[in-house]
Amino acid sequence: MTQIEIYTSPLCGFCHAAKRLLTQKGASFIEIDVLVHPDRKPEMIQRANGVRTVPQIFIGDTHVGGCDDLYALERSGKLDPLLAA
Image (cartoon, rainbow, N blue to C red; front, top):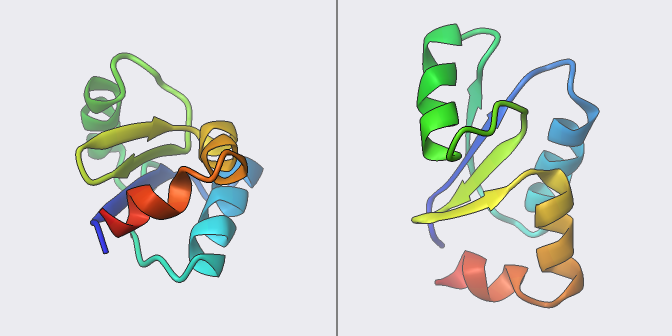
């Protein structure tokens, strides 16, 4: 499977929902908690083209976006091929 990175915050319900979907898919991911590691937030903002909200999800070289974007990929049948790439 492709490497997955997700920038999160423990207080974010959307972060929990995104992680839940990835876990249900059997996808392992690297979680970067921007509250525990505030030095990583500028990195997230740069990688996400200026987006400052969490979660920000990256699958391989693809910036998926946030939780709604992840679920939209799932609904359209495009998430599984992206995870398998």
